[in-house]
Image 1 (cartoon, rainbow, N blue to C red):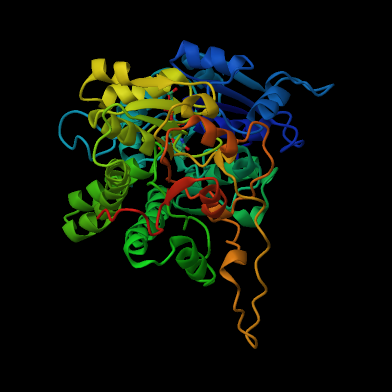
Image 2 (image 1 turned 180 degrees about the horizontal axis):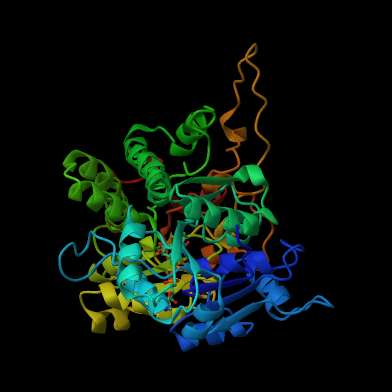
Length: 520
Ligand code: NAI
């Protein structure tokens, strides 16, 4: 099989950050000869990648990019480049990754349900138009199953004579907020190919690239269609766990069961495991909702309506969870937000990312504005312009939105004069929990009767994340002096130790814990 020396990645978004790994000495000292060029149509995005103010926030990303892009290690050549010259990068590469966006369609047939494939198609047409020699094309974007077949048709109809392409599927499993950790030590790398000599050979070429930093037994090759479907399946199963625990949280709120304990008890079952079982205000991000919609649409197109309904119900529970949370806020505040100020802590869809796409904060802020509230938002990393973009594109009244919403530079400022604080993102700086204690030993002969206070959720639960001392952690004692009474905290992520804050006079309403009102 051929040796890949030059890689082009089309699309310089979140997923592009994974292309820092084959070039970066900390992950990959053995790959100094591989060159990666990341291209995008957006001049602004490329300029940001060339600067030290990267277009996305990820812990440790800047260091990894700098080491490859700027060759800050002595004796190394730079081998990571960013460019808007898409044609040249395609021409020079042996292997082209397509990492463009595949959002949900907003117009025409299948709008609101089907994946928008026009960006992928444009990238494929561009490759067909400019490639002068054989290329391996890798689907990195999350795509509907059998997309490679359509790509093949477009390539065959448009390419130059004598040029041939092999298409591989290599879905990306990174989680925003832990992208660098995921790319340096991935759970698995999936490479799908056709079961032909040329397909298998192309897959081996890609295996070689990953094998320079990923243990070989974590690189799995498989049939192309399985690989395409596996990515959608993984995201839908992850979302299904969140909606399952969130659906249970509604039962907890009216029965006196505590979702943290229920989740802990379930997660100790080795068949279930503890991860992705933290109850919350609902999942967000650019992927889970759209991938469920895409899988459901595929099922519907295959005349499998029951399957489609099953997957869609996961998004329905998510919408219900967000809506229930907004209604709980309004009901606790005596059914009226007129002349009331609400501080929203966190706007990103989860901690350690600045990404606000599909964040639960969007619908919550819009709901609270339409109830008459004044909203004070603070998020440590989400760019203001992205917050405004998301709010404006979903607001029924943009003028009112701007009258009622202000973005602040610190949590403390946002809380001044607030009747309620709403925690939407689990940023460490909002939590008052101390370091999680180790798991109690499980001993079958003497069943543990752990006192409630020492039940320590396992690693992987949202509320168990070690809350290391963070400079600038919210000083809740100070907040108590600047808020209006009664002081409500709506903890959409269960990051607050309510015993401590209730002792300071706060009323804490957590997800999946009995509260002041019953909202169903
Ligand atoms: P993104 O929206 O951040 O970036 C996509 C980039 O592609 C944009 O900068 C856009 O300008 C560029 N682009 C679009 N069409 C182009 C073209 N024809 N030529 C050159 N550039 C073009 O998207 P993100 O989040 O990186 O996602 C990309 C794909 O990866 C999607 O299919 C997504 O579902 C999938 N994915 C995303 C993950 C994430 O955590 N964000 C994780 C795993 C998969």
